[in-house]
Image (tube, rainbow, N blue to C red):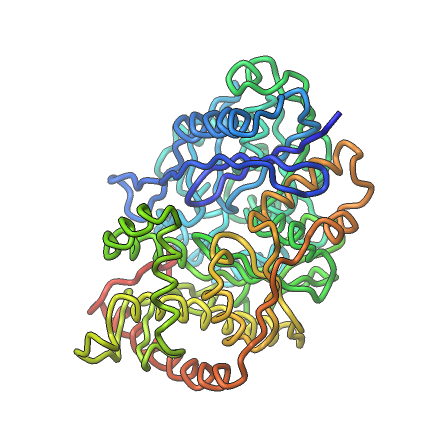
Length: 520
């Protein structure tokens, strides 16, 4: 009897259900875009709609079963993954009472409160947790305590989004280290909660659920969830992990000194290490990998995928019509035209995401600059290519940043998720980084990593790393063009200098930051 593995992936921009066979071949995917609206009462907020989110999850599960005609009884196991940092609060009855998504920045007052109470606190906690107040749960929990005291008093447990999906499927709640470490409430070395971090922030310590390592068989699909989703009651559910960590498993990046890049709504540069150490200047975050005994330096580029979606929807209506007529993706149409624009976009630059500085994290106002009123050279495709190059510059900056912390550069890198579907973007990335870029056959690397954990949890695979190395197949390798790399290195230095000036304008209040961490 054929066996299949299901991955549920709650990303920043969409929820998806993906089915794989046990050889890692994707059988089908059903995805629905979602958004995380701001609460108009609270500037910087980014709410998570748990009711609407679960409804879309159910539709995706039913959708992929219908699309693939795979019997639910042939699904050997299910696991889950998600955007990191987002948190869900539950009351004693297990009902959701508060949830915010990954870059929620409402806790401005609380970050200042924490810094004023102890100016050394953030860096002290970073040294143990690898996290800063920019994204971790401490300021958000303190915000709930200060601004929603009735919710705080009712809070029985706090969890992450991948754990929430398992809870909805099974009724069992447990947090795992790869995503749990992004909460800033875990000790990197022990891969477990550190209650003293909550105590230092004046928060309760009785809200932490059990910890289970990724790949642990945790429970089974409940009767209620089976009725909702069409899954078979009793199907094993296995603990998953954070999206970037599972993406690394999905591309076979499971050992120290290996690196990967994931190009989605946000871009992550991941570099594996065998020691739980942090950056002396607290510029880059460090997380637990979903593979025990491995940790990851991580640098984040803000919103490249969301910038692309904005540009597509705002300026490329004609390309949408062309794509529909040809039966292809709109980005393929845009890439075909942008391929004709020379490397460097005729010297034009844009500013969106900046190179990461974890304890003082902010981004300039979105900007295009250094273009002429020449429609032949500077048209919508030039601007589009400049966005691709901007993201590659940020990624190069992150690679160099991690090198400063570890004294190591990767010899090659794997590139996955939605952006890796673009040969143009993949080649630009190789040209900027100056190293080979491997694009896997399965672009949904995070989902594949999730499926590998599901299979490991029920004994289909004996070893997570060995299974990942076997199942992660390379579709194409992009080799850097030496002339383009030299050109891009010159433009990179100019871009860094330009970005500093753009950031100064935002700091002066003359323009608006694209995003900045609370309290910065």
